[in-house]
Image 1 (tube, protein in one colour):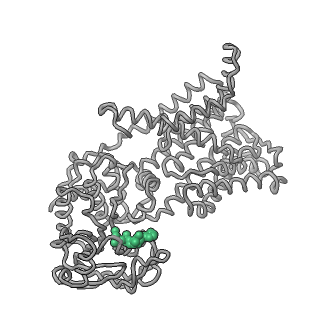
Image 2 (spheres, chains in turn yellow, cyan; image 1 turned 45 degrees about the vertical axis):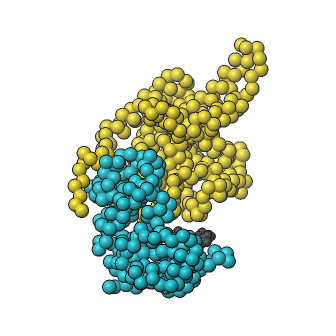
Image 3 (cartoon, protein in one colour; image 1 turned 45 degrees about the horizontal axis):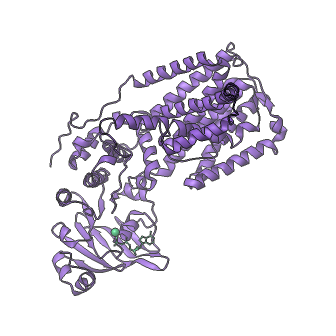
Length: 340
Length: 254
Ligand SMILES: Nc1ncnc2c1ncn2[C@@H]1O[C@H](COP(=O)(O)OP(=O)(O)O)[C@@H](O)[C@H]1O
Ligand SMILES: [Mg+2]
């Protein structure tokens, strides 16, 4: 047999060079638009949440590893930065670096343990480590963290001029980091590494029979996801100037899981759209519902109930979240009614 | 011919059941060998032991004269042992060429380079030519861009063999490559396996003897975990022990 590999017959569309830039422009435009609609004051927080949700999507959406302990790394980034600002110096960059290094080191160590499990065990063992971190911050380390009272901290302006305590600058800085994180994850998830991570989600054992030491690559993905979560945590500290054990509580993980499920796991756009939808539900329903109640003169239930309704809808009718459902609709437009 | 693989008293017990029992199995470099036996006789378990799916209860496996008994699967693949699965196993959430990229990339000359591996689009992977080659070999060039989930079972089988060949194995283990295929698909796979003869060392498990009779140079028969007979296909089929276990149990498969 002879082979004539023809590019035309081997019909793989090469990636368009400008696609990433276009997506970044779209994301930036979306953020600016959002900043016009809602108060800029909230935008830095939102950008932090977007980054956290993106990091979780790498671990859960792409690699199929659902963790209930992702906030450990968010919290490590947040506390690492805060402790540096209080006991080190007031450099925002150094604080971020300390938070990232602390979380990356923890993920590197703990990853060696948690990644030996999968499924429910993986989710729960992560939560156990998260609980330990939460506890450590609350009491044994209270001499440094001040326990439940929390830790106030101040960072010098970036480049001597940009104060992160001004809403616009905080938004600009966190937004820029969000764009950078998106670009990084976009490259990672479309690369051969991204294929490998997705193949691990589908059938890890099979990947080993292609010659890959899957543990190593799972570990790399885990450390990357955890470090990006820590970046979100560090930003949180910088713009808030205050951390309390709440930032490292495993409860925060629930919001992140909801956001990824609403938008569609395993897609960066899905993670972002889900995060935005979740924030809308969480921040605007509590305002709108009392108003509506008054207008309609009936007592409407609290917003948590509506979040529950949205999730039920997604679980039962929007499998794959918003993005997954739209994609499936587009794909199935020609042949009608083909079951998924 | 040089010996490529040899097992010594290889045994696998699953609480109480001895699925593979003191098996001494040999493969010579360059040959095409067949393993037959009734359902549940331990053929797949033997492949699982050879490929590192699980460790043996006792016994030894030597590949190229070095012990590989306790090596994990990926290390055995690196040494050159590649396998397919009785139930086709490819990545159905990826496209056809993405499956090929994963396989080709692992053993590209120079190894995995971090820059392109982590950051370059898989669509620009420096291995696309070799993926095209791997897919052309199994007749899937035209389906490269399709999601695997939509392929027929036969195409999935061809893809599985294609990506396994892309690992450049020194020993290729095919577990019932013809099972579940239509006659037309069987002809395609048989043709493919025939084209491998001389280029690869191949061991084929098959349940129905007739299908592989003209493909293999040597036949081993398993029954109830034991290797009961080995030799040229003609001799083996004439052996009374084989006739007793095989034909005694079920309708003639020839
Ligand atoms: N992972 C396992 N756990 C328990 N029993 C197994 C396992 N794998 C195979 N067996 C048993 O071992 C015996 C041999 O199975 P197998 O090797 O699959 O046979 P074959 O491939 O020849 O049909 C069967 O009785 C099967 O039920
Ligand atoms: Mg079998």
